[in-house]
Length: 276
Length: 290
Image 1 (tube, each protein chain N blue to C red):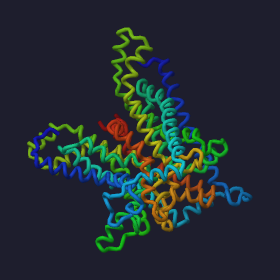
Image 2: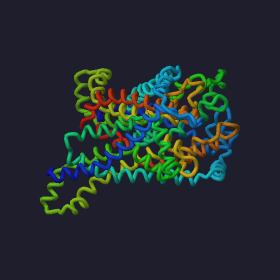
Image 3: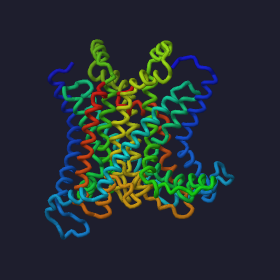
């Protein structure tokens, strides 16, 4: 808001806002900090913000003790794979809903969203048995399918709201200028749709990466991603805080960085176009 | 623009999504319904047959069930209340003229990117742990007994952790809404002598209705299925003190290995979700119309 503000007032608000933001962020910061401490300084009382004995030992330890690359790779394959597959199926649907809406399009969108309301735990047993019988259990392709279907309503919704903002007149103008359908798609529609598709993709990679129900219940070893890796981390016995922090940091860092770069588009996409 | 043929093409393009979602919904649901009337225990597979309504009766007669229902509603309601109220306050604060709004947004959104098992284990171990957690250190430093968060206040602790994860989402959506508020309107109100409170009450709040709707709708969808946080921290305990309906079903299926009973729980959960969804969609559907 462009009202005149005294510098003093601005200073107070800045201090207050930064205090709140740092409080919200603090657990993440503390985890990252602890991951570089020795186990002894990690549990020092009172807690030490900075210690003299920084170390990379924890990362080396977690790396050598667990098969981090496999968990990491599973996370990448599952989150990216399910997102790309979801986009492949959702783009035509969202496209036609946005440009050739029928009477029931709104109801259809609501119905899609409502399928997400079914608690996953409610259908755990049949899913488990179906996965066992079809050989999809503990496979990456199985999780790709499950997470794709789980996030499909969100993908369709987000794309729909982005596509709806592409003005139909621009297509007509291109057509009047003699553009063929092929050129229309390549030069007019694609450039306008790409930002929406990109932020939908990012958000769904994040949702899939952080999914922790199907990934824990439908895997054991082979396809287990980072969410299962963290959940299986042994109970807090003895000195292991620094290692836990290192493992946590390794699990969240890729998505945290991705999220930081794209937060503006993400938030806008998540409102389903209802907040501008 | 929509000719007959393009309309048919449009339906064909929507079809794969609709069919897939329908199958994804109906097959597990039908199987769950079937199992909920069968005797099916993995530990005694020789017993089988119809169970009638006995699994449903077991749930309805179990004191844990009503606890689980109230815990589920408490979790959803508690997190919604906390995130909406604090979210609005945080958004109002960041929307003020402050230095470094960009970095502020990045700090605030961070918890949203932390996967639930990690968020839960950070809070459980680094903060709430009764010997080594930071809260315990502070309590001891001040001469108090450390609080056993997850033992004495399991539901409040889980609600707190989940709220921390969802506050960023709420705050940033509210911030987006606030930033689209016209400043002329606010200035006009200010010139007419409206105080900060009445500007908030009559201009800001009505403008926020839509974003509050979005936050409630989306969060409810995710909160009804909360699992990872409970699995990582309390395991539904102590006793059943923090068992929600999804977790109770999980316990029946995975620990007790009673498929029939878990399936009946699943059907009950679906009915509960439908009741919640019905009210949500009815009251919010029109708010979402673009």
